[in-house]
Length: 311
Image (tube, rainbow, N blue to C red; front, side):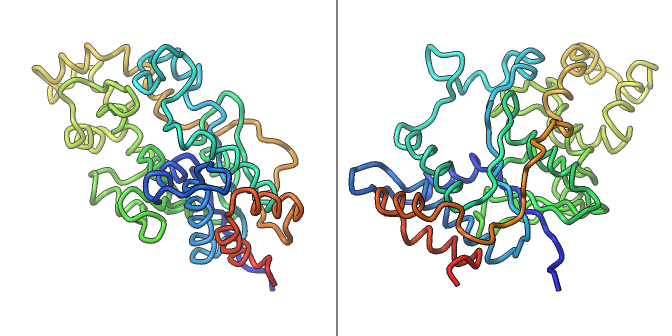
């Protein structure tokens, strides 16, 4: 009997950045840093072993600062630009050479890795969630709160949030968690709250004077951002004084911010994408070469064992 299908979507950069900063420095025989490589592979092994997915995608940032978001809000992630560059994100020198190694190892094992030009991994995740709604449960693994917007109990979409406990003890984000922690009961409500609140880590200003608590209260009262804006426009007497003035002054921001905060859910995906776990190692010779070159045999073995490829 075939197991019930379950899809695991990895916010890859979020995880390998965590691995880089959380795993002690290790080097290949040639002196190349490999702590992010081994840490990321160990995370995959832990997740596959515990969650027992039938499908898994390592989602990739082909563009960490897409033009459509920058055009809408020029400050979007601008503080992360490398000095003197318009295109490169600040990245630790010892992490940069590890990313191609991660890509090569995933390909050699046969794990699906998906990035789409012009989009962030968040958008790939959002589209894959939308594509699989009703077909199978989906868990999103990330250390980024932005993806809380995808939570949907009715459609069995959850987030395994790694910011505190890592992949070994992630927070399980469902609608009950959102209600208790943020005062909004849906993923869509979280996104609307995030628009109002803003996010300095992403260069989103938000509405001045409207913090997380106030934003949640406004969304709870008016149902969603559209309802709040309609109330402002209609002169709702409950919105008054400095709060009304700040919301009205932020109209231009509120016009464009949802298009930045909300993940894209309708990217055209490759027709031949296969999200299923590999039944055998895709390229044994290449994998053996990578193991020898970078001395990552233990971590690769953990992954292949978790996948059942070492039988």
